[in-house]
Length: 150
Image (tube, rainbow, N blue to C red; front, side, top):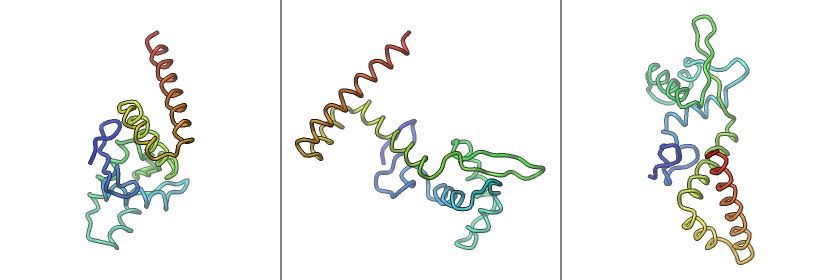
C-alpha cells in the first residue's frame, strides 16, 4: 500500500480500479458505469443488483454512493423525492485520470528514481527518448512555477 496522489491510498497489489477504491466502491462504480443512462441510477437500482450477489443493507449502498459523490466520482440530481446518480467520468476517463495523477506524482516527487526505473525498463534508444521527455517535463514544471509565482 502506498499513499497516492491527493492523499488517496494506492494499493499496488490490487487489480484495476481497486488500487484506489475499496471493493464495494469499485463494485458500485462498475455497476453504475454498466447501468448508467441519461436518466442516471438510484440507490435502489444498485442495491437490487448487489443483494442478489450477497447480503447487503440498503443503507450500506446508500452510504457508499454518497461517499463516491463526495469524492466527486458521482453527480447527484434530485427529481421529486428520488436521488439519481450519474458517473462524473467514463471508465476510460477515470483510468486515464488515475494514471495521470500517479505518473505526475511520481515524476514530480521522485523524478530521479522514476527516470532511473524507466531507463532500466527501456532499451538504449528508448532511454534517450525518456531523457528528452523528462527534460521537457522539467521545463514545463519550471514554466508553470514561474507563471504561478507571478
